[in-house]
Image (cartoon, rainbow, N blue to C red; front, side, top):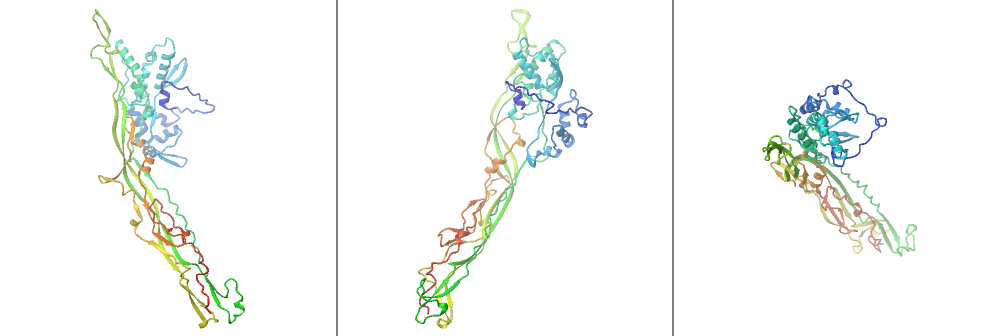
Length: 515
């Protein structure tokens, strides 16, 4: 349950905790050195508490965190590092603390915090017949003086908790005479009511470490998985044979003899072309530091406050009808004039945070490429005149592959079309990423509690890359084997299917009447 939920007007039911289920170990002075070193509650100041939490370079933090069920090294606390189940989170630690008072309520001994006392008074004022407003103040005025002052807030805290700073305000119970007592009690009643300084501070102190290193967003890039190209298709072994007419319906087997009157033909089988294509991936990254700048438009309301009335003394003025009597001052309440705090809307505040980011890219270079088309064949056989014959490719049946486009460059600049870091404007010698502005509830933006990681990642661009280029006009005309289309982060992988080998038309490489 948050402090805000606990303090809201509707309230919430108390949750019972059974010690047999949730064991509670009370650590008393003498059981722990850290308990013994605590400041004396009724004699110490806020500074004493801050020193206990943060002094000697946060030496008490490991033991204090252990009492809270955590194990936080001093250095991690100071620099906002939280480790949990292998994960590491960055932010700002805040220690909320409040003094407690041992009291008896309805003859039951218990510990009361300032919030408990305020809620106790609110509840009975609204629900208990005959309970006078401020009765608990009359009985326990010293409790408010001690509980409220030890932990008053020095600055606004988490907006969702509605915890407002009190600008050094102190609760004082003056009791040298009845008029002082009356004024002190009334002041306590006013300030413990909704929007009062006691109520808004909730008696909760906050210790926030002063970081020794500037806040910085450090985001590594996810690795790029380089796809495997797989082995190149192996070309077939060329084969040739002599046959007697007719093709596919031969009358004679020339291996058993060649009739003198028969015509022969040569049948040659080979791939349409031979090629060699080897591409290599260029997998790179760039890490740069720059400034993230974001403007917040703040909205907040100053706490209500009161001041002494200048028209009366102790809340009374002479009665104009009875010179020897007094009446309540019409301009104040018990000698104090209450003012509503000012409202502030759309007040700009710009924060700057150092950021170190890594962006990756991948493109492909053509390392080796060769292409061979069919030009002809030679058939050697003793039955042929001269022992052999040269055969030309049938141009009417065979279309050689054509290189439509081939581009290759080893220059990095020819493949990086857009660099996200180069696109950042340089202001006062620093690269700056400006984020979209945002509304903010509160008077001060706590930059240490901001998490701008996702926003920076979306706003910062990516590398735009392209490959070398290879387009062969053959079985799939216009389809690139290596595409140089500009893509984001990762260029397209080479398409080996475009280079698929196949046999030519059976009529391409053979003629009739070679013998």
